[in-house]
Image (cartoon, rainbow, N blue to C red; front, side):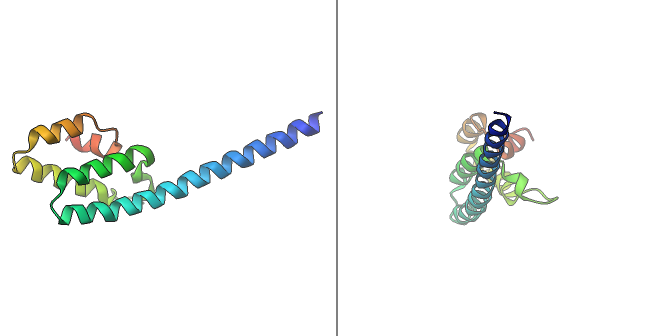
Length: 112
């Protein structure tokens, strides 16, 4: 009986580790893809869309965990979008988006 408990525990631990690894790899890929897409949107001047994309991906994956030492590029991009949107007088739309944000990056940018 104890042998089955040990085997079952090992299987559960292995499956859990595989799920965690899959989630980590998927999030790293999603953050990299969002980074490229956000830069494209930024170049086209779609600043609110940049922030919405960052919010969507970062709220699921916490993209800052995939950078070493420096802030993720999404952070600098979000700061610049906020600066430009405020400069254009789009504060209502910006504040609404930041108020409902679940992204650690956008929540930090909002608090500055």
